[in-house]
Amino acid sequence: MSFWPVLCIVIVGLEGIFGVCVNSLVLILLLRGKLRTKSVYRVAMVVSTIHLIGMSAMSGVTTLCHVFHDQNYSIIFFGLLPLLPQKVGDGFLIVFMFFVFAMWELTPAPCILQYLALCQPNVTDRMKLLIAYSTVDCLVIGTLQITELFFHYGHSLDVVIIEHFLSCIPQQYYTVFLAIPEYRQDFALITRQVFDLSPDEGVVAYGAKLFMTEKSDTTVIPFAVIGILPTYLIAYLIFIFCCVRIYRVLNAYDVQLKSQRTLQMQKQFFKTLLLQGLLPLIVLAVPIGIFFVGLVGGFNMDRLTLLLTFSLWTVPTVQGVVSLSFVFKMKSSSVEGTSSRMRLEQRSASELH
Image (cartoon, rainbow, N blue to C red; front, side, top):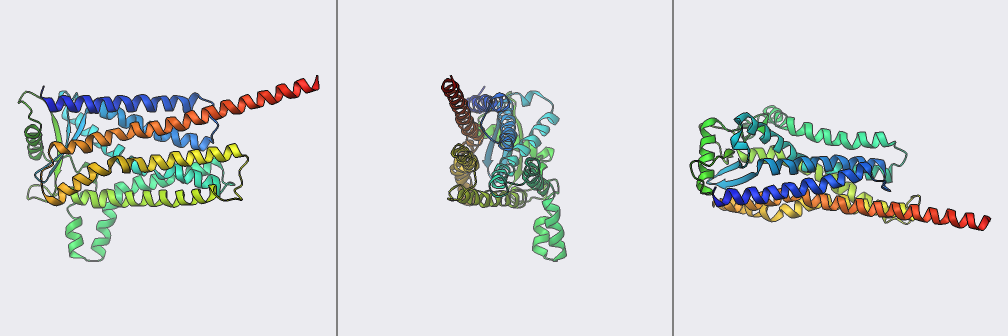
């Protein structure tokens, strides 16, 4: 096997293993451990952790990588996928799209929960969860339907440019990378050239053109602008709004919390959700910046695109470490609280005698 596929399999595979291990430990501690934290916060962390486990497991199994070459954006699978039927790869591609979109669509939920816990304490836990994850549901539904809405408004306004731009977008745009068979052969050929693959080495390649062609009208730019940008902006606007409100409440002198220990727990959870929301942006900032420079500059990134791949699959591990740190702190806080109560009970008993 050639050097580059082996490198991708090793690095992406290890990232997947680390992500699964770290987040599985977090999940076990959340489900079994006696943590001094609110139940709604625990639910939010369980949901996020399950998503990270799924994302890490997929990276370890599929070795999904990216290549940008000659105005073609390719998503490629090494590892086990080339040995399986094509439909299996199609399914994994759609699941991959779901996991990537969920990275930002799940971001507002923990913030909304803490905002409601601090600013609307009379709201029941069930209602808090309903409000938080209804927002996530709206983002998911918007992801699936937003192109149809854009097309409708473009038609009603009778703006020819908008109609022409939006008409190239399939309503089920999450399948934009399921290219026609002829283009799949092109993407596979590009992959073999970029990674110096021998003819007997298997690879599954998907992709989309940067611009429209006579044979295909599915392109990357409308997918990014209409498929990703609206829900991405909405999710992070909610995130920023809630974080600002939470910060003000936690630093107010008249904050109504049961104890100093509860205040510390709230602050620690706030730091955790803040890190989990911002770290993906920080980790992916450099490779995405390089990608856009290459996009605007018109040069082939080729193997340099692997920076985006390796950074993307690092995110679940990084977020898992943040969650693990929070869980350990809450666990130690719970143990300290139990020990303090036991000492007080023993002291009271000795005074009675």
